[in-house]
Image (cartoon, rainbow, N blue to C red; front, side, top):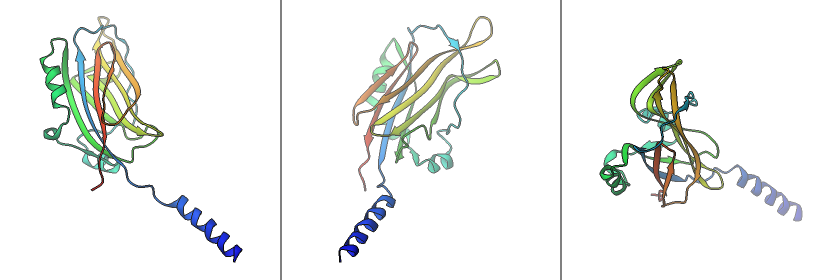
Length: 193
């Protein structure tokens, strides 16, 4: 009897370890903006990390568990309007998505870009180019790796970087910045349907 009980407990714990974790979904709303008064002392431009998912690549988004949301449902419209009225800040682009079970480390990174393409030193980058990823380890994090790129007087490509991995408290507005770029972002848990 005791052996049977022990066997049952051991097999039950093995089954619990192999069970699929429940699906968790998070919504991200993000505004990328330019600080018009920010310093422009670009350092050497860096190539982008690979691989990046283009926000309009439906198949790659689906494979990564990401669903891009339409602009009509953007949740930070009040903040966007304030930035549009500002003399100092210029909103560049917005992005909203829902992601299920974000990875603990660098996984699906969305390619974020704005502006004219620039080419120098074998690099092909937009004026603002980089990536953003949602991560879920012990806490939620937003991993932002963006650069404001410009052609310097000597013809080389320089950039001002915004690289930050920020712990995100749910349902709070977060501000990430560099001397030239800023990001407003909010992450919310999507309720199960």
